[in-house]
Amino acid sequence: MKFKHLVVALATAGAASIAFAADTYTIDPGHTYPSFEADHMGISVLRGKFNATKGSIVLDRAAKTGSMEIIIDASSIDFGHDKLNAHAKNADMFDVEKFPEARYIGKSIKFNGDTPVSVEGELTLHGVTKPVTLAINKFKCITDGMTKREKCGADASAAFKRTDFGINYATPSFAPEVKLQIEVEALKNN
Image (cartoon, rainbow, N blue to C red; front, top):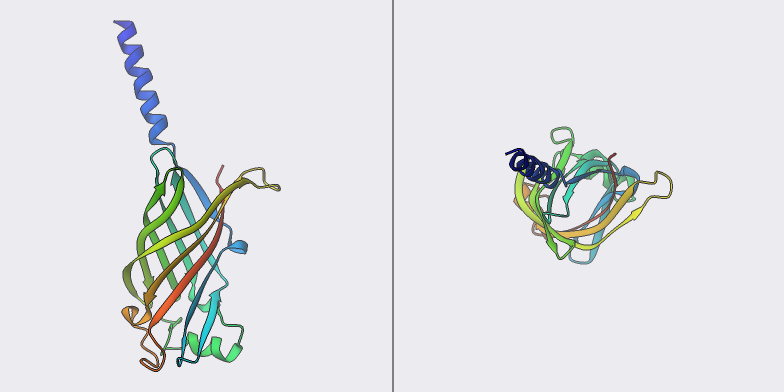
């Protein structure tokens, strides 16, 4: 009888350790920059990035899944051109006073073997939430030399139409398609 209880206790402990196999990582804002490119009157491509980002990533390598949340300060938009930055922040584009944040909630990270390859989630931009799938083009983890903790990095990309999010400025002169790139590094929590 005691042996049976011991087996049940060990099985329960094993199931509990599997249930808590997920690791949480905090995004490193100094190495995480969502960038984008969009048409400029059909003659060139405008490129910009957001300079202030925070969030977290949860990876469960045993279950081969995970989730993420990236919060972007919309007022940190940077085209490398002050006048364009100011225009992009106003009401006819990002309207950062009314919508100070953009947010990506990744609900499911898909794996190919041991490597994350995509994230299914939702992008909230300009007050509108739509599904957006990120392709993970590169993923690697190392031991961070300074903290001695695991640090993971990735390069992810997606495409969407800004008009789907209510950013209609100068359409159709400027095509609505936007290419999104996210370089991200995140440090494993203790």
